[in-house]
Image 1 (cartoon, one colour):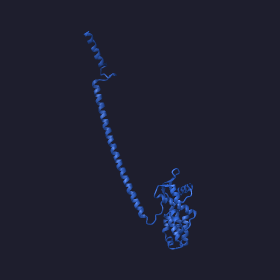
Image 2 (tube, one colour):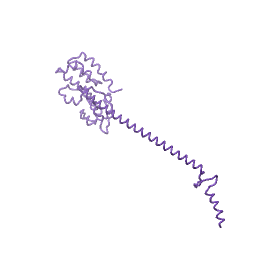
Image 3 (cartoon, rainbow, N blue to C red):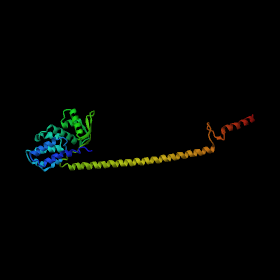
Image 4 (cartoon, rainbow, N blue to C red):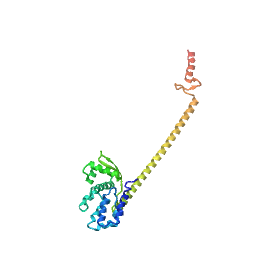
Length: 259
């Protein structure tokens, strides 16, 4: 199951309530949704007419901006604009920090603790690791805490809402990724073809070598049959007689006759 598959369902009750919520009630709804456990996507709520109207109301516009922060921005963005935004409760702070990790992971798979401590304004490494463990438990991300290297290794994350105007950039990145992937696959195919050709050539060479080796063995066998078997001393046998010994026997009477 993919990460965050149930997050849209968690938002559904707030979408139903929003149909009749306006003004202060809509602003309160934003506070409730951004505080609610398990709600991490807000695009559908942000697009509703009753919520969009808050942007034109001076009193309630900060709540609309807050919803934008939770939709596609980070805790660091909130801190940079906190004077014009509603104050966060503890549940909202933790949620926004979780979402900020997801945003950081979109650009890099390895997140050093030093970066996370700074971006999330965490007081200690222990607090940071507890925050990450909670995010993993909530199915926001999957990854590995590397305490030795002081870093978080990201495997997967949920998807966040897409900021307006960023669709083109995402599509361009996807096209670049697709092109790069196609190039890599093509290079791998060429390499596999080269390996297959080399393996086939080696197989042919081995077959020719075996054929030549067997031919030589056959010739040696024929030659051995013609000359007879060899003795332990390497001499040719005729029947059961060593030819070298026979020559010595013949030579001995001749020597005696000369005396």
